[in-house]
Length: 185
Image (cartoon, rainbow, N blue to C red; front, top):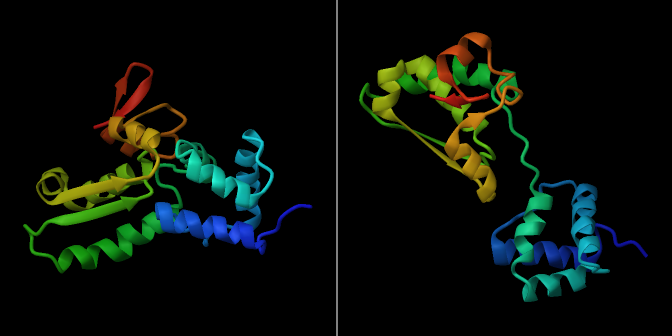
């Protein structure tokens, strides 16, 4: 018998992850969550959600594998262009006008994955404030639960495919060649 999202054992597993690890997965599509959990459960030959919860309690190293399966890092420079346009044209001008010229600006890129969206925010703010204004006032915090993705973000070095969505003029201004890759300046 296949368990469903309304399965009390599945709900108990989701509740356990929320309480023990701070991961609230209620916003995820249930069918997608089930597929991803099933992938991990199949890998360790676990038949049910209750058994998997028990396995997690006994094998804490499994959390990393589970979260790698659940949290698919989807990111891109200037991902969702209308949102970046809205930020640049409608949000930033009044926000910056309301701040003193020397007042700090803090940005938090939560779930930053490999850093593309955090670096996009940097580009947008440099364009709005100028390079010296950005350096003096802006601090960007980029966080993610995936340590491997954060390591990539810290390096700020990407292949050509990863920077393809950056307009040419901005790519020339904000990236420099590093071997066969591009490094964010």
